[in-house]
View 1 (cartoon, rainbow, N blue to C red):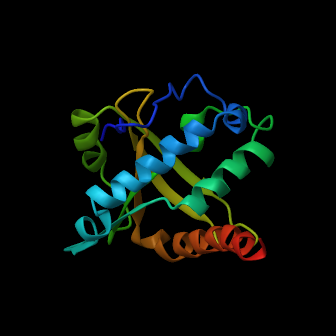
View 2: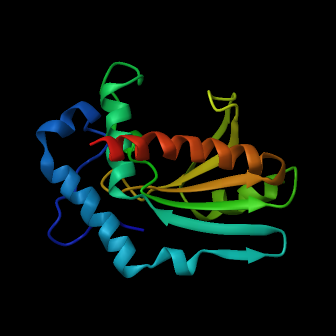
Length: 183
């Protein structure tokens, strides 16, 4: 999981704010180097696209356009004071894994297993319907070794939220793919 990549500088992400990145192009080199490294060496699309008995497991590496969109969102839009957010909060999902369980309630044991083995942060999200009419409900679990590594995100969805979550994600992707076409 460690994000140290040869020839790319590492930063203490907790000390940097999103507003600091405009003056620091080597930080974006690190991010793009890391995502390239993951795509070339881990081939996550072939490792983690598994449908098992009772679940669907997928994963992805965030693409550069999505990284840029997230940076724009945190540096210029509605986030607290503009750009006044830790870098590790903005780039918390460069590598993402999603498990969709075919159940309607998650048992405590599912999360305890991870808590006992890894240093994790758990964030339960429930977002009311957006302008597309779809809400989002999931558990996000973040894995990170230290403040110089990019964290990984595990999303846990339940069957009852699947359709709404997928449509909510699709609406979000539409926003940044729209500005890609306009440029």
